[in-house]
Image (cartoon, rainbow, N blue to C red; front, side, top):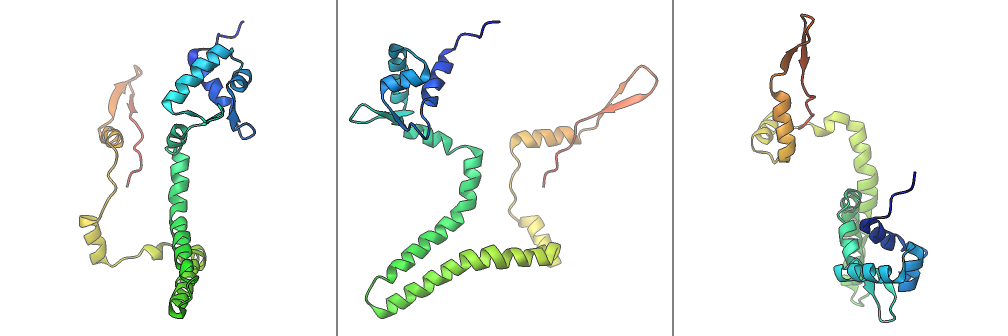
Length: 200
């Protein structure tokens, strides 16, 4: 059985696959050779990718991965999760650098304020958030989430909730509907339904 002929999309992706950590910048002939394409086909595909922003050409005629691909890659769920986890620590680092800049001045009170704020931010980011808070939560267990009855009732009535997406709401309504009863021909009823997702 012969392998199917490469499609236009396969050839386009092979141009992008020519770039890697060892080859971040390639000439047109290098792209054609690494992608296994003729020079005319590589020229046409590289031109289309450059116009779209997936590739960028510098003044020496060498191509690099373009910003448009980085923008699309930033939308990947794993990238978003990592950014959300890292963002508070990056903010703390930014504050520490800004407050640390106060210490470069020659005025003694500003220098002392800068040192105090820098140490406070670093201690909060490391000792408090990485050690004290997780250790306290682990020791308290479910009691860490205790709230007085009045506050729980107020939160149940007025608290902010994350709204379920429309698709999950439809699945939930379908799951809560009565199950259909189908005869199996043997005199017994067999119930069929769908599992109900656990949604808060």
